[in-house]
Image (tube, rainbow, N blue to C red; front, side, top):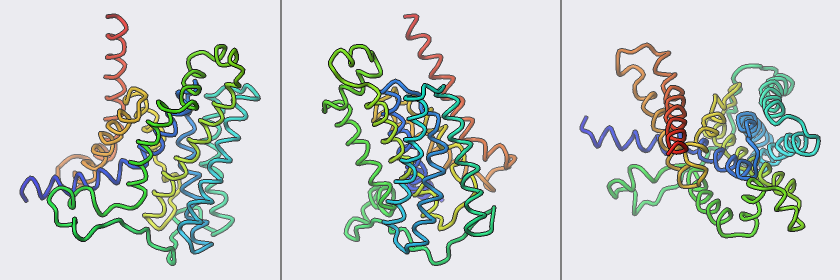
Length: 301
């Protein structure tokens, strides 16, 4: 196998793998810019994953499944935000509680609905369509890497552009960033900073709902804790991407590439399987350490 035959499938898979990271991180960016650390991303992805596939199976419609899954995820996100902002609960505790709630609730509901606490297969679930253009499919690089993905992948790219426009080119974006910098100044303008924080949390619920829907709908099944740390990695991507949409895109690609490499490495090299499976998380830890060192040196200079 030549380098192109290996690299093209690797990069193609990377683009698909990075999408949940990218979507969740973009939503988390809005809460971060509003002055809140959203550690509930993991639980919100899991909620979106469960309810999207369940509603899609019940209704027979992928669109309705995703729409209702996002709605439930946004409701959970609003509850998390209301507890943290209006009731003044510690955001770390309420975030962890959201993650634990999602983990337990999905298992309980899975047992109630399907009598199964393990993997739930949906045999008659509509297939997630893939976007292809026949005329471009044979174009080198373009057809091999950027075509043939689900619509969620291309939506995530649009989301990067929309995030940039909203954050840097709209009054809402200016006020959201102002909320994260100085809430007193926002209040002096006659605005309510809590509304912008709640809006940021709802946006994170929307994008995490999309991320979760992608995980289960492309698999055609629900696996307990299918989010598998993606929310935590997305949180790291926000900081590694310097809290900017383009930076988050690059950071998500790095994490997606790490997971894609680990998938290809299984069975291909003589390394313990546990180490290979842990490789994406090791990359995450290493990236966070390097980022912290860079931030420290930057502050010293």
